[in-house]
Image 1 (tube, rainbow, N blue to C red):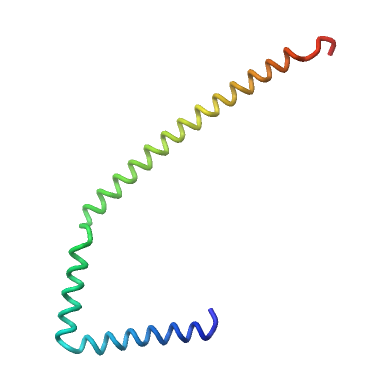
Image 2 (spheres, rainbow, N blue to C red; image 1 turned 180 degrees about the horizontal axis):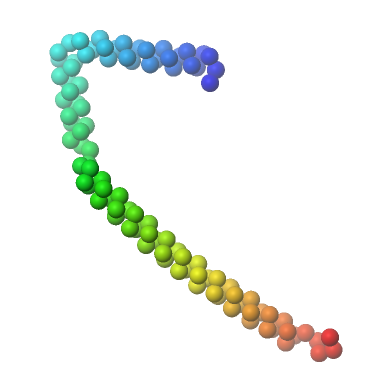
Amino acid sequence: MNRKTAGLLMGVVVGVVTSLVVLLRGEKPRRFLQERFQQLRGALPKPEHVRQYAQQAATRVSQVAGHAKGTAQQAMKKVKQAGSDLGEKAKQLTPVGN
C-alpha cells in the first residue's frame, strides 16, 4: 500500500473515531446507538441455534463425502474392469505368429 493510500485510510479512521466520540457525548445519540445495538443483537441467532446449524451442516458434508467416496470407488472398479476387458481383447487380436 503506498503512502497516499495509507494516509487516506488513516485519515478516514481518525475521522470516524472522532465523529463517534463527539456523537457519544450527547445522551440522545448514545441512546439511539444503544437501541440499534440491541436491535442488532436481537436479530442474531442464539448460540444454541448456531451450534445446531453447524452440526446439521457437518452431518450433510459427511454424508456427501461418503456418497462421493462410494461413487469414486464404483467408477474405479468400472475403469479397472474396462481396462481388463480391453487387455483381453488386445490379446485375442494379437497375431498368432508373434
